[in-house]
Image 1 (tube, rainbow, N blue to C red):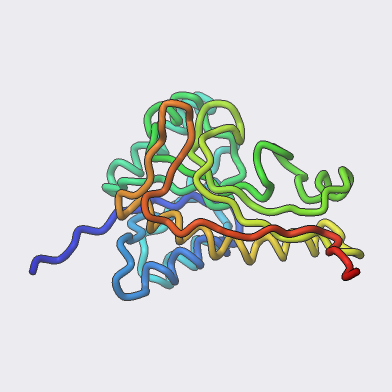
Image 2 (cartoon, one colour):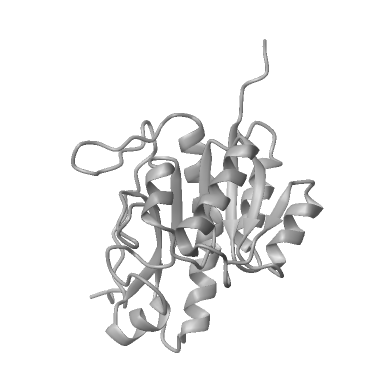
Length: 224
């Protein structure tokens, strides 16, 4: 039997790359249907670049600061690197830079992001504090396809955590991050297996995926 072709990933980061590491670990698991062919950062000193190099992955960085021609020219250069790598899917994993509409169009249906809130609530930055300020009882993360509108693309999967007494933004962020490390590799697997599609209403069904069957109330109900 011939070797199964793996989905080739370009992972874009801006910082330490903990989600990148979760994806690297998944790719090192026997039978995982994807491989990383490029790690890219807009920050020359991003810690995630070294994570990639230690894993034997090509890692490149181009600073966006003062880049000639502005955002679109910069994103054209990034696209050229991605195309050269042969990547099939672009994975934004803590890439803290808004991409241009032309970049989104170039990678339409091949560009995903993970956002640390339960979209469509709390878009943009500072989401953990925003969730606490709003008094929500649950928070979480969302993996979605990227569209030109920020944090607005079709939702593929979400993970939920309870907001606990005494939480601050840092504590909540760490608890959500643990779930990010679980859900992102799973979504990539689903895409690699051809199980993800977007219907005409922008809803993303995942073929043959087990559905969560639970109800949570926070604070929890008391007996009696």
